[in-house]
Length: 424
Figure 1 (tube, one colour):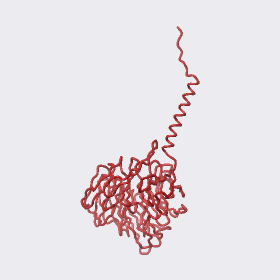
Figure 2: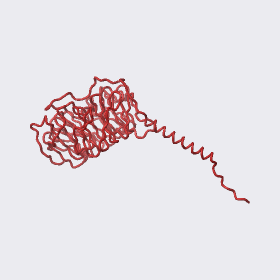
Figure 3: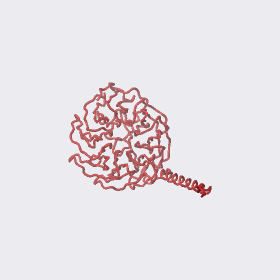
Figure 4: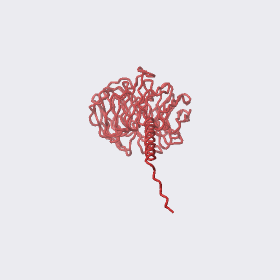
């Protein structure tokens, strides 16, 4: 009997298969492109130009409170202190920590309250950097403290909020959640508000040391919440920005930023509230402008990588860095790119605007100071990572990888001391 031969696919079948494969690839590519989304430009909808951010203009010798992450509860990260400007000389003092310093200190009156990754919260003398006291938590610190009156509040990755006495660092009380906490606390309507990996926003009444309310999201709350006009704004790892009634914890709206078929889309970036808008970055590589009242997306601007950093807002401009190594200045109303600057590495830390200079650090360990109008480098320093820059309106405070620096501008140099402080 003859041996049966295997039939080879005909040319037409091969062609059909190839065509089908090309269609499938095109379809998947189209879905990914759609998921990545095209940039959307905004207009004047819900843009209130009179709702200007920032601390009032201060002169040399005057001080402002930087009592929480991002300066205030709306996190504009802007102080109009033109005297705090380059050129700068060597630091007046340097504090050496025994572990990484990933977040900036609170700066209130004559002290800095510095969170260290090993779980210690250190109070430093503002004038010479000496350590006044050190408080301990049971877990690493990945957030900035909050100072309210005579109490310093610090969240910890052990899942608790700690309350320390400003005077001596004595532990007054703590409140435990069911997940690690990387969210810097804020003070809103008399309560201490922060998020947890357990998927809840907590509003703690300091008089009762209990939760006045909690609000639930679809995943972890890792960034700090923001507060403005009776509403808490918080980004969640489910890709939604939540607007929560600060009085009772009810959710006013929840806007999904991440589109279907997109990569990433978690909101680690802390929102900034200004001009009637909420500005936030996403790991889908975009910066979003969302109406504070409506929850409607007003504009979208794409970068080439994750946006972990939180924006600073000043002069109707949103300043934010990306993991693509670019630092962006975007029109706060429309999202148009005013300029961008190529840094030496990825940017995960948040920006700060002081006078006419915007400061940020990169993962390569460089801190830049750029002119907000021209993007020209006004100053740089070979240290920094994610902590960035803070100010009390008189001095500049730079958080390095394991060090805290105090820099005295020429206008405030008279009477400044210079001493290296001990380690923790």
